[in-house]
Image (cartoon, rainbow, N blue to C red; front, side, top):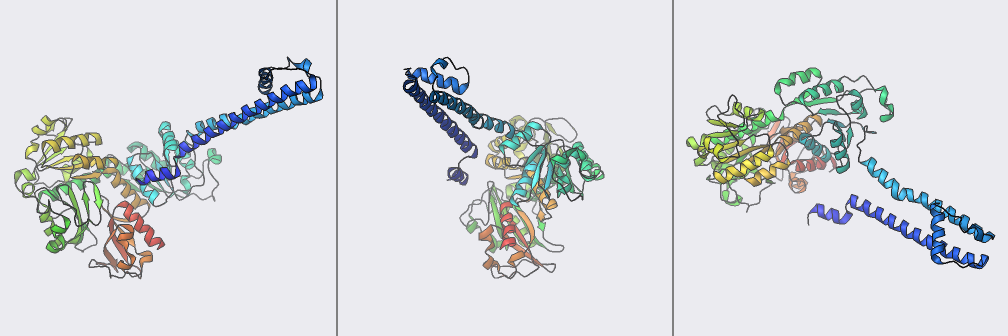
Length: 584
């Protein structure tokens, strides 16, 4: 059973539980109302008979009770109410009716009012400090929120669109307020003067305005004293981080007061270019060096169809014995496994994550290259589909000796074929049949997925490298047949987490997160004793001690105080390791 299904089974859906309780309250109220009305009708019928000597039907008695409860009219039998017991019964009946009306308010009206109010996002947040203020909500912001949630770091989203804010408020657990983040009073309603950082992610011009508002606070705004808690009178300037779509605007953002300006699409373009260059030439590229002058690297190596490793299991590959490199993980069609099991089969969509000396990784690189792709005109040609900022960056950073055909929907400088990459005619015009790699940098993830399906069906041997804006599109692209996918949102989230939380992330664009972390409570323990991989999923690939990198480490290696551990793993694995070194 899926854990989420198990949680729903154990605890129930919160919304369904509230609705069920409301239905039970209404049912109990109606049963009680009917029961009390029946008892009063019987009592009234009996009182008239014993004290007034008058016989009436139960229906007539019930009518009098309903008229008394609802105050819609009564008194037509007043000539029969001559004795004190009957009169007192009528007084009790009337008071009971008024009480029941007031009791109906919380049962019927209050839940309705509460539901209406709960669907409206608040305009201020209280009792929040040392938090991240995220101005605008996007896939990049979603990735950052995931990073913050795993670290239990507080945050608030300031969403200018009312409907979007209300939707986040009612349908997610995200802390959100509605307001214009370009206004100082809105940022102060988000306790920006006590925030750790402000992240502006709306648009280039709006982000510059937000940087001005956040970076030049003059203290609490007199118009919102009631909207935020009292402070100690000191105004803290938060770290201001902005995004730019156009690199030319970065200077204006810094002039406006931004401490850091990010362009993740530009980084994605550079990363894709490195992957392509690594795939069409035998030299090792795209590696991550751990230290200055240190030749111990970590690299991702896509395994090409037709290479020596394609079609064999991890155990049969003999990578460690043949190359000296260590396989610290592998991506099998979008699923990361660390370490890969010995019986896992390597194919043309496997990406190996390896560590070792440069000469060892060079040998491993040779085993991953296909003669069909790595040599000749066919292997070196690239078809680039999509010519926005990512596409132009890819083209600029590609090896000058890699011939490239550019496809785009619009006719502009640098475009060779104008057309839709999802159309077979366009692909044929770009001579995709004789290309070794197709790079998809189209701005729509839906288009990228469909294009991947078309290309994989028409040209099963071509390598497909794709860019994805949303993290949820990564799995779809792998399922469609992509060989390698880089998500803009994931890169942006890692960049922000590293900058805001002051984490030393060595690589933002590698599929595996590489982080340098202080050893903390692991000091004095051996790696085998700490059992890091089994407890967290990360692999300790090196140790930095006194500015020296130690890569020849095993289970008996003892961590010393002051050591920094270089670990590799998924975001979740690294977060678990962070918790381990802090609390172990």
